[in-house]
Image (cartoon, rainbow, N blue to C red; front, side):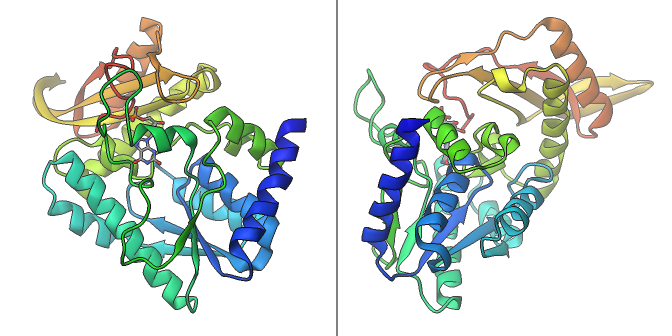
Length: 320
Ligand code: XMP
């Protein structure tokens, strides 16, 4: 792609100019955006970059391992893997059910962890992030509506005063489809480039109510089954994003001779071009029935499955 190869060299020039001889750390989230940002920056400044992957315990099944493998083994880009599950879950336990408190806590902890890692590396001058254009505008205003903050996207809005690092955001002008083109241009494996977006706050925003390790484990299992069925049906690539949400609601059911009283799981799948607007995906009922049956049979703690038929607007893609 001609325009992307031009963008690639243009951005590399800009990154070099901005960074000089400074040290950069880049937070990897497991998503496409931060991976593309990291590879682009690494091409520009090589060993001045260190990637930091913070495992906050809010990742999907096997996601942490996949990210670490891609960067260490495929790219040979220096990567610090921080195990921070206990820290994040203990602080999130203090947030109760408040969605904004959860998001702000996650944002604050990310910065604390990056600060600490930067200090261990002997100081870093820049923090690189894979912020995209829609992240920038969505956190300021909602198109067509009043100028209000819909959600505090944790990776936008600059850094708090106390943080001395400056931001490097080479994807700030791009939309998701463009980031994917750039990712291919940079030689990222197709399986990684084609991945559904995954939000920085991870499963925390798919687990309304109080967050516990037990609920996250239930959610991870349901989510993995749902995605497995989507892949088997050949639908992964036509869907923008699909995931399970674990509701803080219990309902009565029967399993064999027993009465159950377990969580409700909501399934979400949308099509979209840039995440700014989205349509719910019109699965066929047999597919939904199959996914629901497997989830209820295979995941202890869920006895009811519902499908979310809300488009965006008026809904958002994530539930919090
Ligand atoms: P919403 O739920 O706002 O999501 O319709 C739009 C897109 O943004 C992702 N998203 C986030 N990504 N940090 C991120 O990196 C965040 O805080 C965040 N919140 C939402 C969401 O997954 C969807 O792709």
